[in-house]
Structures are given as structure tokens and as C-alpha cells.
Length: 420
Ligand code: HEM
Image 1 (cartoon, helix red, strand yellow):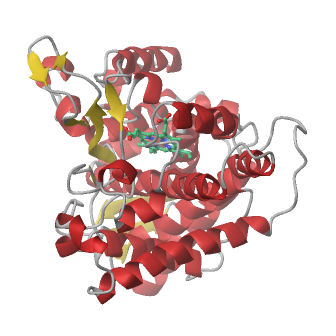
Image 2: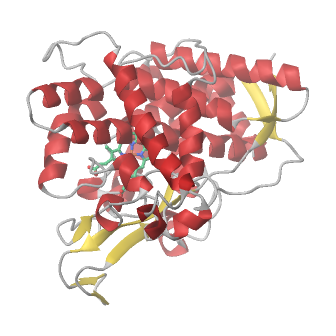
């Protein structure tokens, strides 16, 4: 499926249920477009999505602030603290700085409207009745809630455009440091894309660049909070660096840090399942599954990642060491597992994630700072509930027919303390 995008063509809700609230939110964009449009969006946005980040400073600064806030909250609460809202603020901050060219100051100034809208959008999209019967979205005049939902999506787009318009102007072709928002701006001015395509791509970048990191960090709190041996081993590697301000090269030199993140992505793939492709002709999948033309197809990352035939009898166990013991070996494992489609947290082949490099760097820097400064356990009163489609979902392209859901502990609470 991943190797033949011509046959298993991407088709998101803009194709499946174009009248719906979710289609109004994301429209036709770099993630769900196919063919000409996808090539156009990629040619514009790719340099910004894969921009090399050489200065660890801004991400480190946000990570420090994140840890300060956690410690402060813990001191005030004296018991387990809920982490998701603070994680969301960190994820929004990193996304803003690196893709939108703005410091949203979500950590510094909580409760801003753009942040608030993220929570509202998720709740709005995943209301069970409308989620299961998207046809109802055709009647906003009958269902007042849906009228409000369309208005919310509009407000988000408007506010995002207004926010990025306020940033310092960037001149075209300065030095290759342009961010996604700059590249979209230039393309709009040159008439390469329409205003609507501009908005759709800006919105989808905003959503995808923060949501997945947000969920992955929730999973990191859960897994390492339950697994002190791994938390300690990771801390030993970080402390052995004897550094407070590592460069990106220093960050990338730590094998266990890298392996822990990949193992998190393997057992807690934030995008755990998507059915957002449609066949363009009759085809045979895997040698024996005949699929008629125009059939919706998809994948399940958790299933692939826990397949014992692929990952061995320990497939369901959290064992970072399986990735290798030095950075080069880990990179090789990642490359080969991705090419074989045995590791699909970021998908594989022509439509694989363009933000993978950033996502891994951002997580490495955050874990470096967090594990260095705090120790934590999961609050013993917390009962694990994994996010589900109807709970708090992911706005990738989650529609009833796409059955996409993120996988991360919901409303997680931890108890933490500062390391002496
Ligand atoms: C832990 C973090 C992340 C995970 C797990 C993740 C996962 C994925 C997955 C599974 C897909 C394929 C979606 C599909 O089949 O429809 C994808 C595509 C994509 N991701 Fe990510 N992503 C992450 C972070 C990011 C970030 C930070 C960005 C930056 C904006 C980003 C940008 C994209 C883009 C542009 C695509 C579409 C690529 C294409 O179709 O050509 N992602 N990602």
C-alpha cells in the first residue's frame, strides 16, 4: 500500500465527506491530497518542513520552561498533577517557533484563544453522534451544535492567519531558513496556490506539528513513569554528558535517548490507525487479497508494531535496546524497518512524514531536560484509559470511515520531584 500511492491513493475527508466539519477544518492539504495538488504543496512546503535545525537554544528554552511549570504545579498541588494541558502548551510553543515563525508564548501565557480552540476543536469533532453520522453535518440549520462547529473551524483559521500575519516580514530566498509559513506566503503572493489552499496547509501544519508530539510525550510520561529502570538508565546517559546546554550534535550523539523515543513510537504510535486511501483500480494486496476499484483501505500501526512475526516474541515489551547500541546502528535499524514497512509510525515510502526529523529532535531535547531535572512516577490513583476515536482524537483525518485514532494515555496524572 505504501509503495504504490498511484493505486492506493490518498483521499481524506475532503473527498469522502466534503460537506463535513472535519473537511471544513483541514480541506485539501499536503497530507491528504493526491497527484498534482500533493506535488504542488510538497514542492512549496518541503524545504520548510525539513529545515535543518542547528541551534538547540529555542527548543531547550521551551523545554526548561515546561519543566519549571511542572515543578511549580507539583509544589502547588502536593499530589498527582495532570500533565496533558501543560504538554499541549509546550507542543504549541515548539510548533509556533519552528513552522509558523511566531512565538505563541503558550507556556508563558496560558489560556490564549488559539490554545483554547485546540481543546474545543477536538471535542467538537469527536462528538459521537456527529462523528458516527457525518451526514448530519449537511444540516447545520437543524443541528445548532453543527452550526457552532462550523463557526469554530472558521474562527480557528481566521485567528491563525491573523496571528502569523503579525510576525516579522521575511524576504524571499534569503538564506534557506524560511519556515513553512513563509514559503506558503510566497506561493500565495506568486499565485501558485489559492487563498483556500494557503489556509488549509497552514492549518494542517499547525495541527499535525503539535498534536503528535503532544501525544507522544503523554506516552513517555506513562511508560517511563512506570518503568523506573529505563528512566534511570536514560538519566545515567544524560548525566554522563555533563552538560546543561547541549548542541544539536550533542543531542544526536546519545544512543539510548534515540532508542527510547523510537521504542515509544513503536508501542505508542500517535497515529495508530488511518483508513484514508482509496484504490484507483482493481488490485491485489500482499499477493492474495483482491481489492476492487474504489475501495477504502488503510493501515494499523500498532498491529504492525506488535506483530511477533516481525518483532519477535518480545514484540509487546518496551525494550529500547532492540534498536541497537550506537547511533549508527539505531539509524540503520530505523531505516531498514521503515523501508520494510515494519515500523510505520511515520508511514513509509513516498508519503512518509516530512516532519520526522523535527519531531525526533524536539522529543530528544525535551527528554534531555526533563529526565535530567526531574524524577517521576505515574500517580497510583490514575487508571489507564487510552485515547480512542470517540474520546480525544487526532485531527489528521479522523472520520468514521477513516477510523483513525491516536494512542496515548488520557488525562494522565504523575507525581514528580526535582532531582537534588
Ligand atoms: C511524533 C510526531 C509525528 C508523528 C508520529 C507523525 C506521523 C505521521 C504519519 C503517520 C503520517 C502519514 C499520514 C497519512 O498517512 O495520512 C504523517 C504525514 C505527514 N506529517 Fe507527520 N508526524 C509527526 C510529526 C510531524 C511534524 C512535526 C510535522 C511538521 C509539520 C509533520 C508533517 C507531516 C506532513 C507534511 C505529512 C504528509 C507527508 C506527505 O503525505 O507527503 N509531522 N506524519
